[in-house]
Image 1 (cartoon, rainbow, N blue to C red):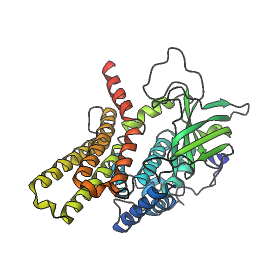
Image 2: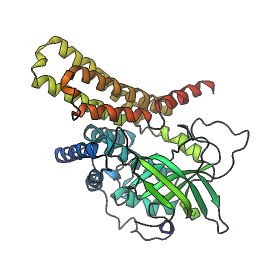
Image 3: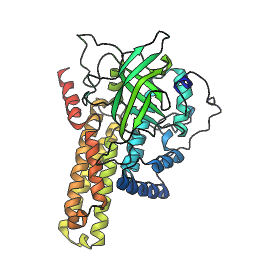
Image 4: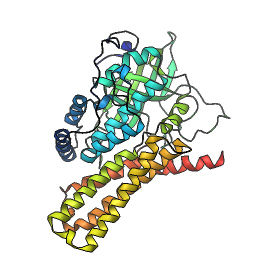
Length: 390
């Protein structure tokens, strides 16, 4: 693990020396089984799923979002969504860690300086480093307005960052965090971006930078292995080379995220598919498929899953007239569909699903978590509707 100074010191192999990550197109049966076992353990003990992370590092999946030249597999948004969905079918917590890693890796690829890309992306592609987003904080709201985390210039040209982040996935597990901070006061007439605010800047801060402290004491109802917790930054000093993008332009970077086509809806599709598979297994085991009513209920549930998958695929292929709006719709619809699917499967299971240890209960808690992740479902509706006023 490196300090903030390593962002300016060439202490990693050159691109020609960096071994390529193995291209990954799907999960092997063995990997699915091991990730599923990790999910069951983490849901019981509520501890960060370090074993699942180790499996992701070994699998080559962490490099999927990056081009071959940086040691990645060169997947597009559709490929990323597919990978996230497949992981979510067996381990939703691991899929969220994977999704956030892809998100930060892609932002560095798009907005990083040549030096940042050269020094960070090979590590992220090979799985040596896990990346995490530290954007949310108590009191700022789902739209990331009124941040209390600040970044101020030092006389030497660097930055001092102070504040506290909440609901950070991979807290304590990540090797580098993309931290959102208020670096300057927004002008009174600054336009409302809907998500984020003027005067905000992103910083890439390695985990062992003095002043950065994760806290995983938060106990969630769902996604219990995702290491979702707090990250405090107190008198955290970083060089200007830790800044991602121009000063004060974080809101435009955030706005571009949804245009990428990568969507949290993929997590919801994976959860919904897992619930549907469970329903089929239950019906076949109990001999219920001989009943027309049960078969028709399964068809209705499968239709929900297929509809959610279709809209996520549309977002990933970026074929809509407005890809950003399509991505928002995909997250909103798939997250809601996953909750409906889980509820329908719970009713089909009857008393069998009312046992606390039954997996359908984990699926339900995990499905609800996606609806609350940024942009939350309510914020998705607001961001979509704001486009009608332009």
